Amino acid sequence: MKTILWAALSANGNYAQSGPDNPPKPEALADFTAHAGQSGNFIVGRRTFEGMQASGGGAVFEGLDIVVVTKRVKEIAGVTVVSSPEEALQYLASRGHSTALLAGGAELHNAFLGSGLVDELVFNVAPVLEGKGLNLVTDQHEYQFKDVELLDCKPLGSGVVQLHYAVKGSL
Image (cartoon, rainbow, N blue to C red; front, side, top):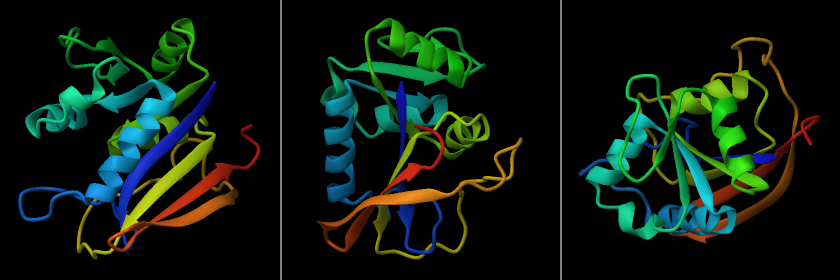
């Protein structure tokens, strides 16, 4: 199964932290919705999922297989709850999916990267600088350095640029 890690980043490489003062760029949200629709699914951490629900984004994802990875709760209405990245991929494969979209957050992205489970990266880089924030950590486990190959680079609008990479040696 091909696993695509999707993230919105700030121009200085941190995860773009959205909130009332800094809402996500509509172009990035539209791109995520398109990727989720193409995959038919997405994998997300519990806190990120709760943030999606709080912002009213749930209706857009009706009909998709949503998998929440968490060890803290056993059940969340309307989604499948699993306890590990591997279990998330096994579930989606059992449902007939050939691609898994990894939505986030940072802790879950790093767990997938650290386990060598990411085949492609899609970064939507927003035209903002953030002084503090979360980032991808590639020095966990044996995943200390990995070459990537640029597959595509395109503007999405409003200064958002998308970088699409293949993780070398994973496909």
